[in-house]
Amino acid sequence: MRNLPAAVLLRDDLDIDRMNADLAELGTSEFWALQRSFEDGVVGEESDVDWKVLPLRAPNGDVRRTDPGGPGRDGFADTPLMAKAPYLRQVLAELGTELRSVRLMALAPGVSVAEHSDTPIGLPYGYVRLHVPLVTNPGAVLVMDGAEQRWQPGTLWYGDFDRPHSVRNTGDRARIHLVADCATNDRLLSLFPESFRALLPASDIAYYRPVLPLTPPELDEFGCRFAVPLSFMEWGLQVVDDEETDLVADVAAEDGGLVLRVAGRAPVELLHLGAGEFRLLGWSEERLLRLDLFDDHPRVELSTRCGRRRQVVVRPARRLAAA
Image (tube, rainbow, N blue to C red; front, side, top):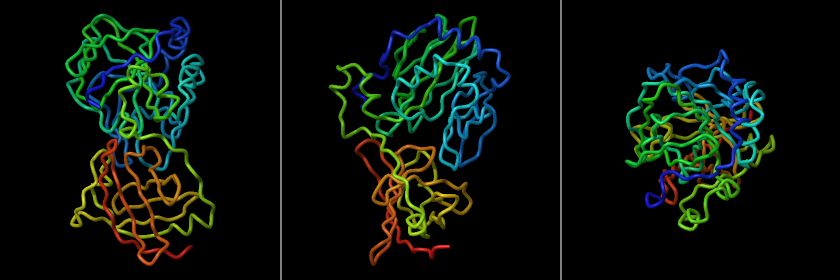
């Protein structure tokens, strides 16, 4: 998709006065804090960059979670702060798709962030990152693919943040954006200009699929043990068929759901998409498990994808007796 624009204007009709009213309500919140990372079920240390975050939607609705979240047992939910931003909540609802993290992010004056890529984020991975600028200045610049972007209040933008990008704020006040991570579906794509959609290869998009809950007897039937390559548990990396790195993995029914437990790793809840295929709670269809347990050769298919390109590793499995 590198032939497509790195940044796309989705809306230019947002009500600036109503956004400012929401920001005035949230701007003095005690919960502004430096951004943190998330890795293997653990929230990392605060960033050493003065880029403060106020979470409106976070894992388990936890207002202290300034990280973007990831695979685990806590689903995303609105924090109490979302209720204080009725217009921003309306804008988000009009996207018509499932939301992951939603954060206000304030880059302080005089701060710059070196070039990096946010992987896996983008249409080939099943979710995108959208920006609504709230406060900016001429010195607040996002650079994507070498092109400078100065997004203005009243607009909604898509950015392909899987591409190398950097940001700087040489102005005299903070640059504040609403940043929303959203699942990819047809309604969201309808916001893109027709000229963009005409060039978009449908087979390279990982579309969101709704969860199909399993009955209690089915949950027990999917209990199994198998070996999982370490690379499958390294979020954002492609799965590699390397038996020397295999870890013991169990899938079992817990608290009304299926949970993947891997030796030395944080547990992750599995969400059923149909026909024994599962994605990870807090993640997209970039990473899937297929539990084929009901013939003479039970096995598990572990896959990662970027658009139409898939990597698949198969391991034999042993069904576990129901508790």
